[in-house]
Image (cartoon, rainbow, N blue to C red):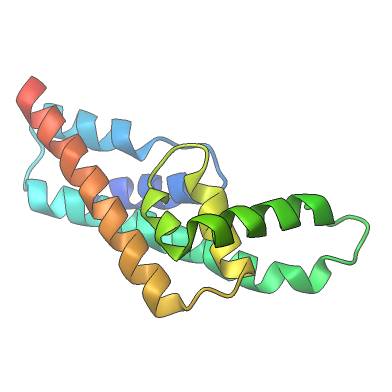
Amino acid sequence: MGVSWGLFLAAFAAATLLPAQSELALGALLAAGHKPVWLLVSMATLGNTLGSAVNWLLGRTCLHFADRAWFPIRPAQLERAAGWYHRYGRWSLLLSWAPVIGDPLTLAAGMLRERFVFFILVVSAAKLVRYLVVAAAALCWS
């Protein structure tokens, strides 16, 4: 598997609830001299955006199971997430790149029925900017 596909998979995993660090992978590849930069940034952005789309889809479908005892999100937690999302609005998805809050935000967007077209445009833009910053930093320090 090529370097760019490996980065795609790392970025995809990092956007889901799995523990992964795609920024470190991108930075390491660039520091090691892998090129072209635009391809690596594109693959990281695409993988991470698609991972967030999986979160959105999970959020969209998981509420069908909210009344089950095994469902991991309690009603109070769901209300708190909905309140936060409604308070800060759909533009809070610009923070989908951020550690800790980014993945739950994308899940909440699905649960709260955010339109997919808006979701994918905002999330992909946020993730692209993040990877451009990471790439610029890695290239400056290598």
